[in-house]
Image 1 (cartoon, rainbow, N blue to C red):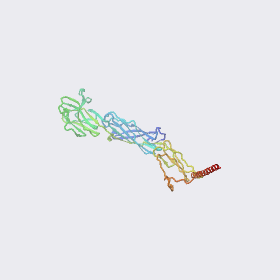
Image 2: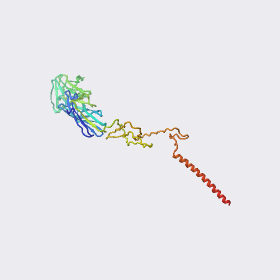
Image 3: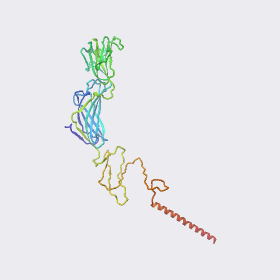
Image 4: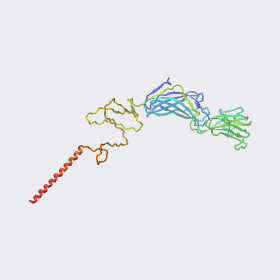
Length: 440
């Protein structure tokens, strides 16, 4: 019941959320045909700033585990990627990822799981979202390097006619042991995954020729001759751990090498060297696909935002936030105060850029001016006038049609003219009086 229910977690950013358990059955690739059961503990968390962080903690649910597909040097990685579906106020997917480095591996060695997977995304739109785990993918990326496969490794299979035993340390054989046969057509076969393989054994006197088959096809012509040195001269002593044959570089994947004793003479098998070259991306043929077992349920989270407001709701694009000033209604000088009209309101919630416009039903006609953010672009508007004064500059402005300024100018000129006339008359009378006094 708990696995099929939807959990509800409404909390402030940064607070831990409820977890749920998703159970998977993984098949193919490193999971093998029977499959591997895995459990993921999925925990979403709302972080400050509107970030949704989803974490997965993984564990094996049974005795079977992912296994190594071959012989690999230290440093291979097990890569897991999950899918989380987000629906509701925000729709999309998150893909939590994680990996785990592995030690040197032999075929079938258990692979260690990553400690966890994680991914995050921005969820800024307020409302309710549902977080539900979906698919899970498992990929194995082999490390670049070489691995020696000893002759007595279980991955090497022998036909009838072979014996094995230890060798003296003085000879220097790999791990001081060999497989030996004197039976014609006796064979030894190794299945491996990699990009190259080599047959390692002794060069020694009286050893017979060897045929090599790669992926079932004969590839040695002429035959390998361990009884001779590299120059084709018969051996007089013993040289251990010689590379008797090496394949060309192969496409990464599963291959086989088989050596066959071509004559009824002595032949040895000491080891095989498996090489894996540089692999860019985890190969798909090692991929395991994991399917949900049952309904894991979902977790509901509430992204905080504004309280419910009448529609329509305006959500500005992400740009420098303008400074909003209170609504301003200009003073009306025509007598009667005009009736109140619609107003603009701006009620941003924490971290939200939402403006809401409320309109009253059938308002009377009025003029409302709302201050807007300053703009760096200046627009020049030329006033339209009926006529430009003759001889004037076409400035786009009409001449003044009267007012206190023009009457004052006329009055001042008249007073100046009268003062000048009066002063002239007084001056003439003084001159006449002076002249008369002189004659008397």
